Image 1 (tube, rainbow, N blue to C red):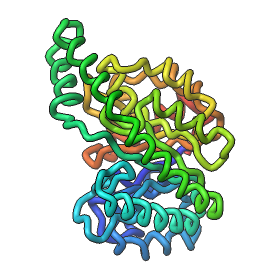
Image 2: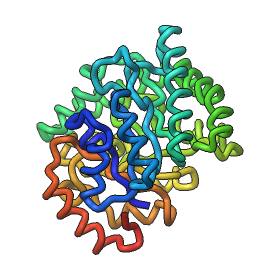
Image 3: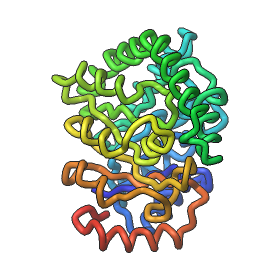
Length: 309
């Protein structure tokens, strides 16, 4: 199932129906309702859905945005936060999103699980800047990366346990609503879970069909570019848990959410890891032009005729 995320055009619209219509005009019939959505767009989205004009493949937490958050900020509240009120608010908003996901007959809810309290400017962003300068093979880069990994490993267990606890609280409602909790791979190594933790998390819930892994092509490629993992090896390890993916391209080394086939990703070698019929969602930056998307879709149809809108 090929689908398209509203993150591309959400910010350009005040009316939900017009937002849906713009995506339908691209040639997509399935739509993922993404984060950053104001509650005022819900009536228009409901109108288009009730008329049968689109099918909702899934929803991305939080949907709609918390009313007190004025910007598109899916990580405004984290399950891993040291502030109990933030953890409580994250759960409340997730339960509300689950209810809306069920209303739109979504198959899944994409979740960000939080982070560990390390400043990205000192770690992921520093490593990225070094790679951009061509220093990824320098001893200084290797030393900084090892230091980062060790520091994160030391403090991560508390935040991992909070992520597990949040899922334990959400999964009962997910089963009740018939919506799978899709734990997404993230772009920063400070985020929770990293790949080792993701495998532990998925194995923790291996007997629960309502929790699975959501692959983000761009996010994982960013970590691949920093030498923190190998994209193919990671997919090989996590493959049994995959339920779907966000697809976008990456300009070297760290500019993601580009239109497919315009960056460095080799989709032909990556797509075979994904089950036939699983949701593949184009999740593109609002800066991507309609003409570029249409051209990429024509390429997609030729390369992957079995995975069409």
